[in-house]
Image (cartoon, rainbow, N blue to C red):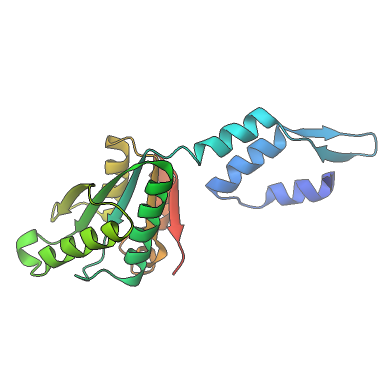
Length: 187
């Protein structure tokens, strides 16, 4: 692949997000300049395979639940199905963390929601998973997700964009402070 040096310089001047940063680091390490001031990329197999392996070696997945719908919102159902499929494919464990600012006693349909979570994961082939509840502890959902991911040394967090659109989760904080990759599912 040939890219003119000026084009690359202009591209690099643009802001890039965290995922793009990894790609640019891999790209910049593999640049060779020829005599016409053009650059050519050459693949660095070991670096590329290391990056690819990091995204295919999932052993412990986190499914955060932030909505109050006792039967789970469409986005949460999609995240549960995706989590189950990935866990099945990679032989990974699943941890579900139910997050709400209210105490359990003030959530009348909490047990119904837990049953819905169990049902959706069992539909994906998972009867056993770890369940955590962080209800009414005063922390923001984004902080709780990061804390749980860090404490349990998780490999991947799966969450629907619906949680971000509903303002349950702050995408900027999620991107900045997560200790592992986050899979954001579109609505």
